[in-house]
Amino acid sequence: MTKKETNNESVNDIILEDYYKLSIQVSLNGLSFCILDSIGKKIIRSETYRFRYKLNPFEAQKELTAFIKSQGITEYSFSEVVAVHRNDLFSLVPKVLFNPKELPNYLKYNAKILANDLLEYDEITSFDLVNVYVPFANINNDIYDLFGDFEFKHHGTVLIETLLAGNNTGNDPICYAYITPEELDLIIIQNKKLIFFNNFSYNTPEDFLYYLMFSIEQLQFDINDIKLRVFGSIEEGDALYELCQEYIQHLSIYIPDIPDGLSHEGLKPADNYLVINAF
Image (cartoon, rainbow, N blue to C red):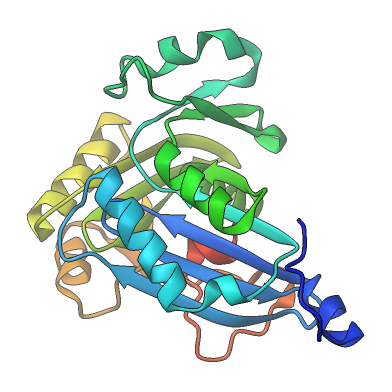
């Protein structure tokens, strides 16, 4: 991207800024960001901001712009900017069946889409999948105005790529539950293949449990055999964890690996999973 022009930058400053990278995760429930020094392999800043209630895309856009400016993120120059859109407006398509001219048809049964919605797709090339989705177009426009050219992707793409790449469990099915306040992502993997992925909004622990149990049962997995790995905004002793423990025998906290040996002092990889793994 084009550097900001100033008259008093040292050569060292310019070189350092060339290797700063920014990732931003946006949903209607909140947002987060991560700034990476790719030379020092160090995450130098990371913040999460939860909205008081679920916003619409235009309200979320205003919150994002105000948050970015209040955090001084625009004072940096970045060699790479990545935006991650977290929503339930998506559909996974096997690559052999994918046709880029048919995007509305892939989504019409899974999501409510409007005639003027921007439709995009991510190719998950290592696993022969395509993720068709609706990004927040107005938020993309704001990010472009703030930072110039950038890459964007759906949060499901990040979860699927990273969890499949790190899964070596063989024949046993494993259900990963990525949890944030008000949102749940379920990813089930078996034989190093994606069996299931979906995103749910929940208000109570009982809602959470319903989506979890219903998904497992619909796939005809034995609730007594499947391994559940939970991560994100959950710890042992939490209400959600204790509720799961009543029904799931093989339950544990999943501790994600940090990519590329990044230094992450004071940072919880599970809480910042999407922004850390977006690069």
